Image 1: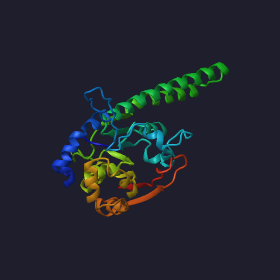
Image 2: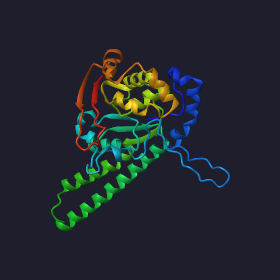
Image 3: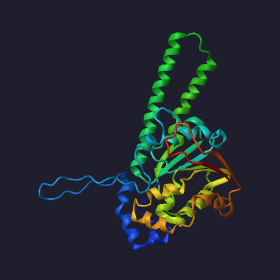
Image 4: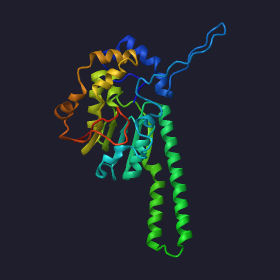
Length: 304
């Protein structure tokens, strides 16, 4: 997740002149994804393409290097419980290219699910992925149906036909229940009414923390609490402190915030339970088969 506008209650580091200049200079990432190429120079010298730095964690092809190529489904989907999503209204914060969001909608038949990300380029890719996956699914179902009719055209009962039509309609309605939107989630607390049953925040906390400091992290937790209905669940995959160290130099804002952080990942649970107000938490996984080294992160589920 990322941003191009300063949130209310931003950390002192983010509010400074230096921090503000860095935010304005990097707004291009939030609006369209990657940063610009190198500038031209006189005298016939070669242009040097600048290395793209994703200061908000808005990586391209993120799932490609996180998940083993031999694994078809994101391993995290295997540990999620059906009752958290089926016929539920869901929100995926920092959805990147939308593959987990789409997977949840298709696997668990959510009533509605919204994926938000600050990067408009990633949101457009998520929408394209949804159209691509639905086209592939539609073609595959047509091929299977045609093969079944060719093999045994007289054996389909009225009930089976009705069931097949129902399944087809469910996939067509996926466009109605699943949507993607560019949004800076922590920029304000406006409109925080109870409207979701399940909220996901997978490998996002570090980037909010580095870009908005402790204030931004608390804003994230409070907003999630306010958006959840009673009995709702918050699914969080926090990055460890060692991961913060690896990315502390991606921008001047991140560097400054890193040096002033007082809330460390190992204290998130205490804050969410004792300060924010969640009643319980469960650790559902801390290692996954099919996940590339460095991405075996704990997944915690908080209950409101």
